[in-house]
Image (cartoon, rainbow, N blue to C red; front, side, top):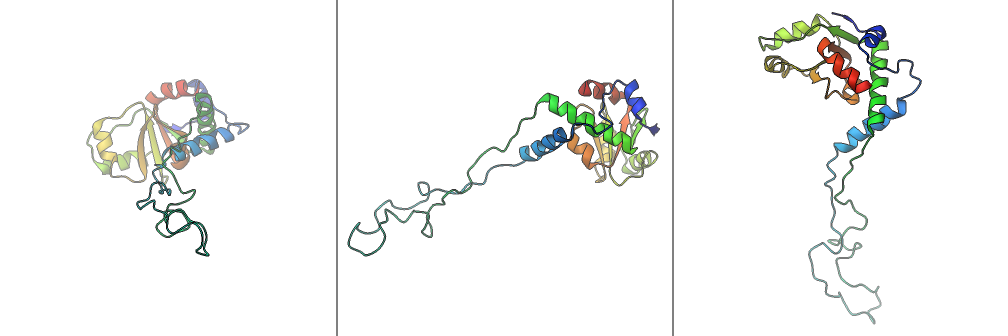
Length: 201
């Protein structure tokens, strides 16, 4: 177990933006896209053409002394349709691979500069017990939120972790910028370095 440094990243051929010179907009765009893609977009109000009711004219066109109305489904009446209400839509945003790579380089570089990235040779809890994975994590980090990044994890290790709200197991292939920003300390297993190098290339 040891702190993961910029020099370690260079040895592993992981490309970083460690000086904060660029990439902040890429991080922002990517996080906004993650949040937008989680929106269901199912809110929908009925228009005057969709509400239930008769289309019969309410009263005659002329001679009543009132405004000229066609039917009671108009938006100004109680029970009528909604004008400019929400409609079923997709909020999904697409972000290019170039922007995703730039954002990952930036956030990884910041985390390493902050000294919250650690490396371990391997990470496995064969017993499948929560107390054992807590011990294994606390040997490396005492942070309030910890993410462990590896190439893959055994079923027993996943079972040991599933009751923990302050720790997360994530594969290097599926690791995203939002997770890196949320979780405090990052523990990188050596077998994940090659995948991270490919994703930042």
